[in-house]
Image 1 (cartoon, one colour):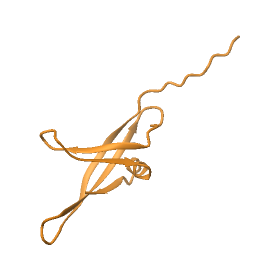
Image 2 (spheres, rainbow, N blue to C red):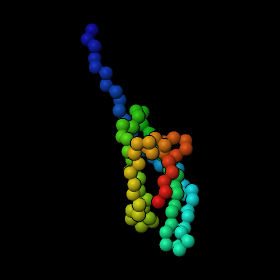
Image 3 (spheres, rainbow, N blue to C red):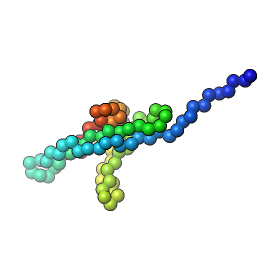
Image 4 (tube, one colour):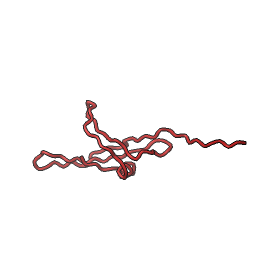
Length: 90
């Protein structure tokens, strides 16, 4: 009997935005600046852990035009996958 090599089944891994919510909005006294805080919860799908350590996150308007884009990486990605989510101020 001859042993065979093991091959792991490797389905694609992808992230999904499970929840995205606006937490707070603060306007400057002169009404020229606005700071908006969002909370992002991500879900991971696939049988194997995702090997990527970053994720691109973008917001598009109703016309499909991208209005905001950021890179979530490192500890921020770990937080976005946790039960507390990742907070982002824009």
